[in-house]
Image 1 (cartoon, rainbow, N blue to C red):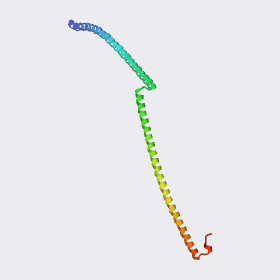
Image 2: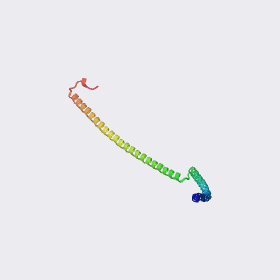
Image 3: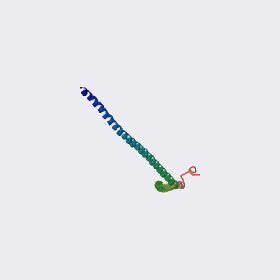
Image 4: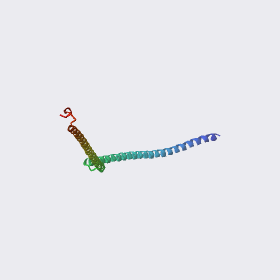
Length: 170
């Protein structure tokens, strides 16, 4: 009976030894995994630092390239050889020439209009002058005829002896 009672205890101790040995195995393998994981973590950190350094280098290189490009463009702009600048200047020059041409055409049109108005007004003035001249000539002829008719009537009356000296013109 004691053996039955002792046997579970012995089993317990045996099991505990087995567990300890298993734990030792696990600890060794776990420690091995730890150092492998630590190595992996360290290499990942190194890779991350390396990637970050590469990123910073690439970013710096891109910045330097862009800066050099902008400086080159500025130099070309100052020299007047920048292609975009030349295109814009050509476009502005074309617009300038077009505006000059339009201004010249407008000036010619206005000049022609003024000349037509001048000729029209001159013709109207000549016609008015001629009409006035004819009118004055007709009025003068009518006046002369009236005076002539009055003189004939007066002379006829004098010859007839019917007018006193009072009515004679001085």
